[in-house]
Image 1 (cartoon, rainbow, N blue to C red):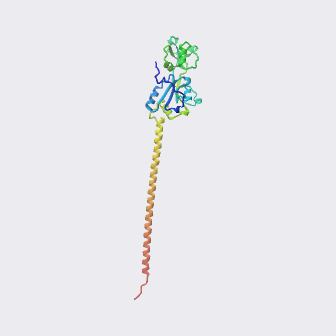
Image 2: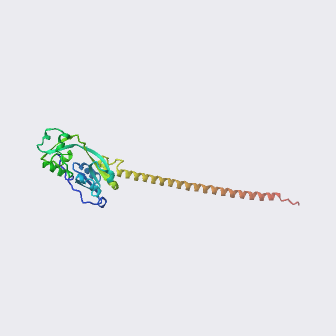
Image 3: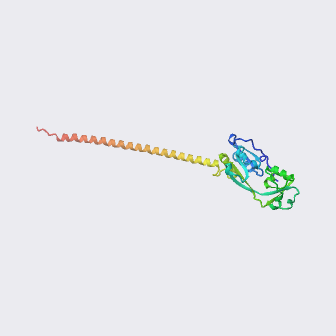
Length: 271
């Protein structure tokens, strides 16, 4: 059976505003194995520290509500509207019935709910305490198989139970804490590659690159417009200079013709 890794056994830190300390704070319930996502995060964002801790199901939303965690792996359903959460379903878990070692369920590969319903007991506490009660003879319990395997009790046995809806696991975070760091982690959980266009950092780089292209284009167009204006002014100045030169030459020719005409018109005196 699987045993939790040291990282999966970590306890969450004291309540605080996620923005008051650096890094990313992630909570998870028993049965979830987030190690693969944590490793991918550390490989992709080594400069952003990640802290994690396991919490009971009863605390899965409280750690988001009071700021102990930025993100939590939760057992569904949850009231996302009342809690102000973004929630993404991830996968479903197989329900099993848990009994003390030697119970008759061991003779079957799977058990219909109707066969064990009378032996179930009500309990609102955490999964570890629930298993303590089963081990102590309080009755049987139906739980996610991943949780039972996580605690690995030697004196308990379990079998898949039919007639029970599967348990669902999702990832949740507060709508008012939708930071780029949170979005990057959600992208890791959803399997996006480092270069995916849907990753927040890639989108930011693309936006900055597009902004730079627009700025470069505007600068180029402004430079071309300035050059055209200068060329237009220079051409206009050249045309004005040629027109002035033609005007002066025309005035000089007219003056000479008038003077010559006057000489020709003067009468000659006879000798």
